[in-house]
Amino acid sequence: MTRKKKTEKKTIPMQIDEVTAPEYVIPLGPFHPALLEGEYFKLKVEGEKVLEVDLKLGYNYRGIMKLAESRSYHQNMYLFERVCGICSAAHTTAYSTTVEMLGGIELPDRARYIRTLIAELERIHSHLLWAGVGMELIGFKTLFMLIWRDREHVLDVLEAISGNRQHYAMNTIGGVRKDIEKEAIPKIEEKLKVLHKATETATKAVLEDGGIRARTKGIGTLDKEIAKQISVVGPVARAAGIKIDVRKDDPYAAYDEIPFDVITANDGDIFSMALVRLGELVESVKISQYCLDKLKTTGGPIQAEVKEIPPGEAVGRVEAPRGELMYYLVSNGTNTPERARVRTPSYLNDYALLFMLPGESLADVPITVASIDPCMACTDRICTVVNQDMRTQKTSTIQELFKNSR
Image 1 (tube, helix red, strand yellow):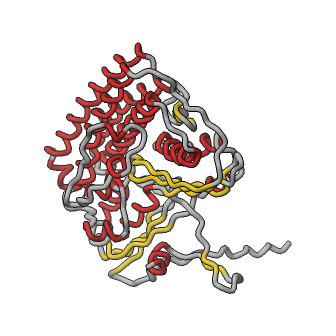
Image 2 (cartoon, rainbow, N blue to C red):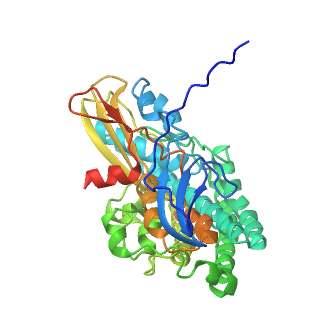
């Protein structure tokens, strides 16, 4: 009996060449205790010092954008909500905003306040989740458990409003699906007071604990000029001193009338990213309270009339917890979009790691990766470069794509 020959699997070479002692190439991922999703880092190290990094994604490609082109506008609400579990409301807000731009649909005031409230509650949830994971990665398990205990309060509020702790399904084209009763507002306000106090406790711990400062201050630094060149967004950009926020720069929902501050820092290190997110928690609580005050006095419908979507194209963007989230839609006049394109924050921020990791200790790699709050499920794309003769194909590394794009 003869054995069958194993077919050789084609592998995609990464940028870093193999080296000899005292330099080594160490793989991190695609499956690793410090990485929640499939991602692969090829680290060239000398002793404990990281010299070069290359990044490979593409382990969880789901083809959501292609699927959206075969479903109706309303069916896509449920599809795009599942691009990311933590940012589900941000994705439906961006998508529905883009469809409303195509159809010339104006949101009722009550729907605008409810959308804004859900978006800020989701931001609180996301930042608390990030802070807990970060504390665990540097070994501060007590603070990790305390932060995640307080995270339960915002999940309770979202469950009371929507019925779900994740995938709230609150948004719809032209408004929101569920109203918030006046009787529920005092209970939500009590939870917000608890969250405000919890944020103050977490901020104090980060500022005063010497161990946290030692593991985050001056670690994983992203230079401001490099941050501008590679176009990072969200807390990663604001931690490097770049004052950008879609809620201020291009307001949507009810943000054009809500007073709040854009939190920034200057050092661009992990400590700055923590301070930015903790500061945003305070602002999110204030915005949520503002929306609740408006809901006490603002009546009217929660959905606008939705007619046929005319031919055209539109770009909508929102400030997701991780940064600017952009949707591009093309309508051909039918009930199904002809083209759908999603640009997530992590799609821009992940590349920053190639500049943040070199020079750092190998032990600081997990917390540096986590500092940008990457989401690989919403980042992964399949990119094939086809030559002009349309016959030969080549799959490129991220460094090669960036070099060619310049």
